[in-house]
Length: 596
Figure 1 (cartoon, rainbow, N blue to C red):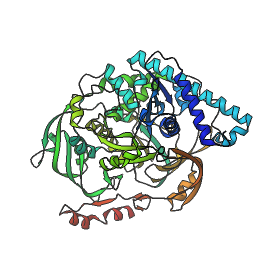
Figure 2 (figure 1 turned 180 degrees about the vertical axis):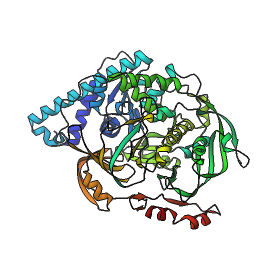
Figure 3 (figure 1 turned 180 degrees about the horizontal axis):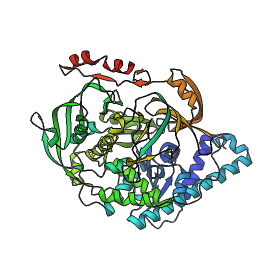
Figure 4 (figure 1 turned 90 degrees about the vertical axis):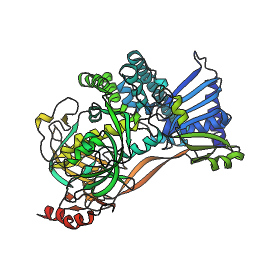
């Protein structure tokens, strides 16, 4: 059958699998089945299989804005069955997940020949595939079984009730550590404050150097969470002409003037979908504490309007509890602590705008398309189409939730967030990195790490929250080359005297480029590399194809580089009358200084 009619054969395989599920004797009303990477792989096949074997009205799904399946549910199998993605809860490879919970992992590496239908004509390879698949399933089950026992015994949290690491962390926080209620922001306030929500302070200052040191911060975001967080909304300021920044705590829309001669600006700004650190003049929204920090460097601000909040220290007990475990434990305990430390804040930054999946009769499709904002359309059969539409939290939902995080078990129905907390955490983290960013010896900064040409003060190094650690453990990098944010490479000699090369380059696998290739791109060359077994997914036809491709890599950094120094990008929004005068006065100062 497989050779004569592939589609019919696949449907028969799905029917056998679903029949098996229907005959299972359950002790509860719901069966949860985890797949490790349901979102970007298994879900594409599973959803199509369910839709072909059951009436579409009995199948539903949750899909995020990157077209990734969060869960798939079918209520026509006798009991309710939900397929969930364990990768969203434990974002690591299956082997690392097994190591984390001390169980046996994969039997062998994945063989690309498994993806070819000729597999079924090769009995030896087929048996290898069966053994590989069985061990994968066994490994995932045992890892999740151990995880369930640990989280339930320690925190009374059932991992079947969560959809992501952030949700798991929030449930743990609420189970043992939360003392004050946390509120859901109304959409109008969320929209304003979300403009202040930037990521880590990644920037490049010099292109090439020898004898380089590499440091990173111990748990930067958890350290930032020890600060006071915005809590109750005190007042909305529509005019801030008479407000003193030093006496204000909250979020402010400001006109920014960054001196043209500032060599290493530290205040982020969104331009054309990118986050840059420019000089010049612009308008944006920021957390007040970041504005106070950068004002000391010469930034000037005109306050326009803002939301003032009270302060609360919300996370101290949670952070200290897990950091002590991380610092003093090994194995499962330490890995669990790291996971919970790094993911709690992200829950509060989730977009309130969600996605709803509708299985619509084709005869009614036009009406749906005319009345909703549609993200994608997936034809299922001649009768039904799956439509992914945008939705938003509204006042009725907020009233039902009592404006608090009272019920966090169902990501499916409500998107509850407080972006003020998430924005404050990331801003505090950027403040920590400011001294390193403005240091003339620093070559490159990432969210929580730096490359520098000098050793840092030993007093800054330690195992406490927010202290630095030597990422190279005493080894000095011989050469490093920085092309742009998330694009760099370096090499060093290890303890045995062997040469080791490392590379990070957005868009290609880590360490897939040689140091000479990084240097070639840095010098303006375009190189081509081969990438085997690249997966391409399509939500529109629920398909995944595997291709060997060639990728062209070139230097796309917007910054101008003179004498190995990257110059800041100049922004001019044109609303400050003094800007043109300042620009004319200082436009050549940076270049002259560097040429000296």
